[in-house]
Length: 470
Image (cartoon, rainbow, N blue to C red):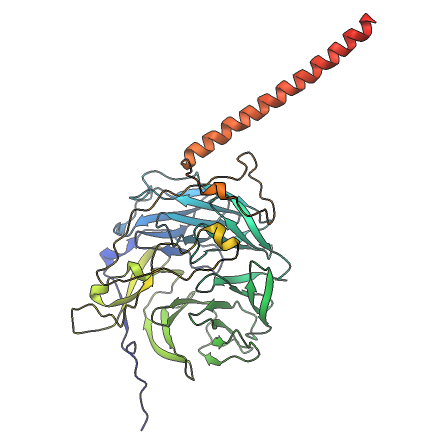
């Protein structure tokens, strides 16, 4: 007799929402880059779109479904196509974007969404010499952002001061496919075009684990940390079959398990739910989402089911747990990008009872950071601060996101500049005031320069006069 493994997620089923709950008439970006093109949080859905002369993305309040007008305002400050976007986990109105124009920009979205197009970011982070294709916020420390570019560098920024604090160069000989923080943000793992996965301690700036040829195939890989510190990778075999593998970071010699899937050629984007240990694989260009449960006994990775639809997906957004409807036993929600629309897909566990299902919703990461940026750079770690979803998630008031440049007149980033001083913890003026102050300071500086050059001239003339007098 074959004993069927017990799991409360065996019957998870996916369902696309009705047409009027979709976001229609959106020109989804056609840029050839393997990022998700979509980022969502409990307030907004952001989608990278086609934009003439630059790069842009839409930010829509979740309830703004239906046809989106051509003239709907966009976030459009980049001069090249936007390649990746990521919402700040600690402030639902702050989003970062990376672009072909080699910059990273951080934006503050108004409480109720955009009324006019936005071209002025709160801060521009300059330091990459090639396009920036990967953006990811630190999971537990406020204002820390990681970016990776096609210059094969990873930069970790203190967004609160606009500085590059850590620069990881010479660790990746080729294009970085993705970067993922672990649960408390003390380590990162990366997948690279040289077929290696690496585990890096960013503050010590050293590689603490490396596996060459994690997948033999030449097509792009992805690597993500799981709750327990293990790493899950997706990639391709030598025969171009898509694979899913699990690795123990203490011993990267051999994978704990490898699952062969199919021979499609789309990159598999993994989305992981640390609360339920379910991983969802969305292939770019596929029309399905496969999901697996990860357990700590062999064979470790258990196929649960596939959500299949007719249309292929151009990209995918994944809602954080606090944005789900717990009354409907919703355990995941995806925002699937088609060529001209965005379609939410809801994953639910069927239950007869209307009561809160606490086995489906253990306490989850809330919006409060465990650490300030300075504490993390000084070496502290903090696990996510958890919240209960028993009465649904009630968003608190987001505090205004502020940037205080270390030296207001010097925007250019110095590599690994000193940790920001404690003075930065004082209360900050609003971003628009900061820019005004910078302008005034610039003017003062140029006037001072003028005055000092005039003073020099006066001294010269006085010298000439005294010589003539003699």
